Image 1 (cartoon, rainbow, N blue to C red):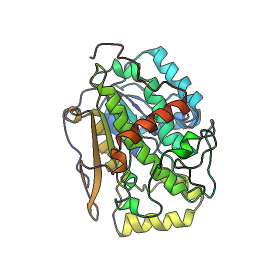
Image 2: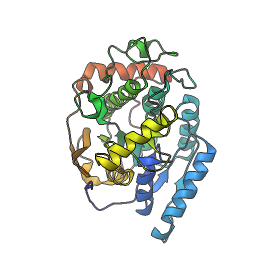
Image 3: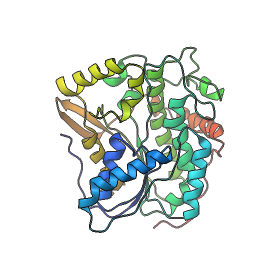
Image 4: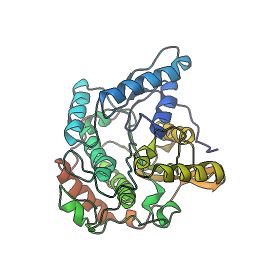
Length: 348
């Protein structure tokens, strides 16, 4: 079982993407039980209603006085939806203490690329572009937060030398040729053939590069705001939901056999519950609020055993010029300035 760090937890207001299932939902359960105020954007109203109902039922016996939970509609595949949600939150004006960029999309097995509302390859649009847009738009609320921080869910597959990164085509962004072409691109590096598995790995490399560049840019402002990136390990829930729900559409039996072998026979996967506990700690534990950027990985130590520790990122993820270029090209695609605005308030 993964051992999560422990610390005294003070109530925080936390916005978490990807809270309707999997790791995000398990983190939301734990944070709600601990008395934190949660904002859980969901892609549509029915998902939001179902998430709030399920969360209420699962946490009803753990609180004498309920902490506030809201679930505004926000589709990470639509930049206009992100803007609408962010504008609503800005109009309400309540500070955000932790922003968790956790939602992830993978549709491995698909032969053709799917596109977002703005015409960008869907994996990159949801996992990277949407999160960059959201974080920039919500920066004023983070500025007003208590010891604010940003948590980014990445993956070991961003590194071609990691166990998961070795299988199939490795992550690699090239010189961003595809991304630079704008609407209609299928692969960031501009390769001619679409590969859904590589697109996911590329998006996780984007997550680490984005986190590093965000941390660098935030460090130039007057408010301390660390960025914590992490890899949860291979998480395969037993439910029909969760991370692999889209990939199952293209190879259901292959995914079922893979899950059975990896989770139940070899026991090398992590549970959504344990990974969710780690994410909730990253969002709330004060002792982790130490450096502008950090990366931690929930690494396999043996069958059924994981070790959560600081880790090295891939060589490509350490490329400062690539991080800067990715940020600037992405900012242009999402229609936002490349430079962060100055801090608007004094830190709490």
